[in-house]
Length: 116
Image 1 (cartoon, rainbow, N blue to C red):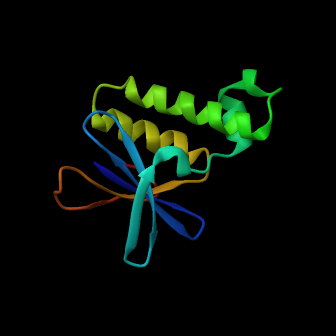
Image 2 (cartoon, helix red, strand yellow):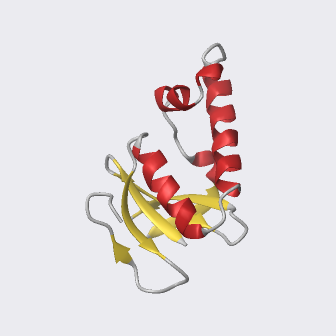
């Protein structure tokens, strides 16, 4: 399943593979390069609101641990739709707005105002 989010003027794609592995890519024109999910920019304030126990750590440690916990939570979900809904809701807190999603190579579905 592919999810396309908009954050400011940048478009990003998150691909959910069958084993709950996430790939991340920035879309620039017609160019897309997928990499691991570690490229995703999460805000420090958003991470601390979810995980207040990280408050006494450095900014780098907060981002690393927040991303690690985020990935663990996604892997614990049973279906791709559950992952899609969680990503839409959770990344919305960090300024990402879901624009489109595509499942199993079928037609792309446009999402209005970030709601499915």
